Image (cartoon, rainbow, N blue to C red; front, side, top):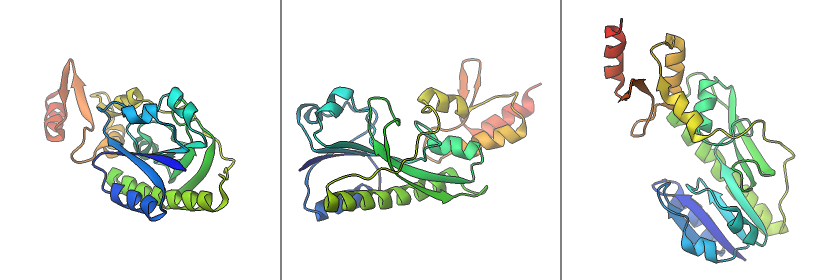
Length: 227
């Protein structure tokens, strides 16, 4: 059995994911990249028993998925209520009481495949974006271990019966959530900032004309000076 493992660059948990697979003596090809990287040529050319996308930056083309002899599995850092991009962000904006992670088969269309496993956990109103991401990563790793161990033992996948609850959020949807408007009331502004601010990453901003203001202190000054 030959497995392709797809990972995102600069993720601290990559080493433990790789270590887990290697401990199982699995014939493994590892692909690590960022959103700016093209899909690896080797992935396009080779045929695998399993393709496992674990926070992968790539959307895998249907022609690649069709070549896989067994399963294409994606580990999504959100529950079926939040498919697609910005899953953490929209959950925080909605003041969701619970969250989770989902393992599912990959289709050509993102986050629409048959669901294998969902692991949920409670979140409270004080949950930050950073804490939610970290908690999701822990849950997702535990789901990965469970699914792979079960599969290696039984040689088949069990499916949860859960269904996706809505169409996947797009990058454009997330971009809209990040825009702070002068017309937004303080409650909405607070929710948007909480849902999209993560130190070291692009986050909430004011778009005034064609000018983009990302510094929140600068934004406060703009609000004070605006008529």
